[in-house]
Length: 260
Image 1 (cartoon, rainbow, N blue to C red):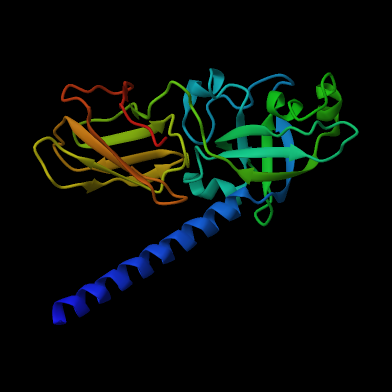
Image 2 (image 1 turned 30 degrees about the horizontal axis):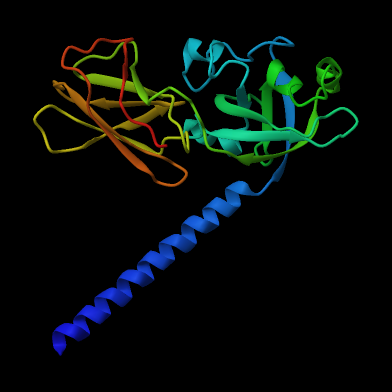
């Protein structure tokens, strides 16, 4: 009888915790799907990709697909001292006289210098800004300079791409710095850990700037497994031995994994 009582208590607690988790996740999803108000401007060339490099550290990736023409700088509220890098948003303007009904999807690759701290600001590439216009009216829309917009989070999608880890220039056996590329789903990074060869211990990396993380110590011995946790929802993914023993700075190592 005592066994049955304990079992029923365990099952009740289990389903209570499960229900609580589902409620929290549902609330987060609902918040992400809700359109919010903001302001959009544009920078760079009229039909250009916006930034060259940018404050997230993606470098020349911003000039090629799938990031090309989808890059955007954001103010402090969304940049989050760099931890907002990689997040994806749908942005839509509302003036039916010149704006289409479609939203443009942008990827946070840069910080908007001088943007207000207390409001949401998108500084889009010229191409992304013009994409919100009725066909043929991209130039006229850019002439507006600044627009009220609505926006919401959207999952990042990189068809045919798996999550990759770029070893930043200057990395050594005593200072290893990584940048995450093509992170689908949430897109942002809340924490990163690495595990050395023949070790069961995950070592926490430190956020340096933009989307760059590093660890000091050593000598660090590869191959390295990498575990990343998203900032938005705390989803975790571990890539085993993704960085080989003979790794080199400025090299990019692609995993077999993605969040979808």
